[in-house]
Length: 234
Image 1 (tube, rainbow, N blue to C red):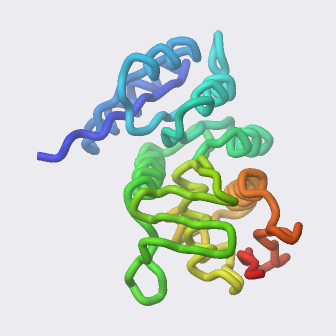
Image 2 (image 1 turned 180 degrees about the horizontal axis):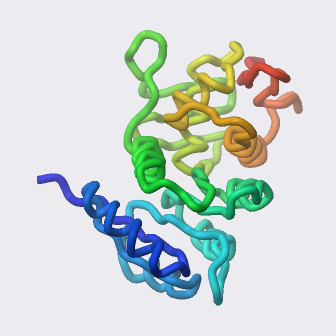
């Protein structure tokens, strides 16, 4: 029997937590709840979870504060819950290393789908055009191992979130070619892009920061305005 996936749901809205926890339990997840940031960090420090759902606005410590502390030593998948219309919150969350975000109030079915998509990125790799994912992708000074889900750039290991890894993998599989935002979203994020969705932009921005420029000083991932992205071949 497969081990049940454990989720920490951190939100100060007790009624919402209970409703979402009940729905997620029916969907086969094991759910623990925390109603403030400090309680969330205690849970994360004493128990093992596969994913955490973090509300931005919580007492004692905000979701941003929890995410900052978590990212100091963990790449655990994180899905942020933001207030509807607060685009800045979603951008900040992604900059801090969240894997995805969802505006509140959220539909439990949509939340479940987003959780499953993020979890798939931890354990699966998007196929290339041949249908067979390569085990190692190498471009100049960068090496990506799909099995170990590890990246080495300029001889040093680079810590990437599950989403950043998946975005980089798709771009490397098509290195030198333009990958549209829609295709990148479907293959790396496991969902279609929505209007005003900034997720890909922020994940690519994080990758650029973590990987740095090419050996010649040029940009590693190029933005093709109005189309998508291209991993540059030197």
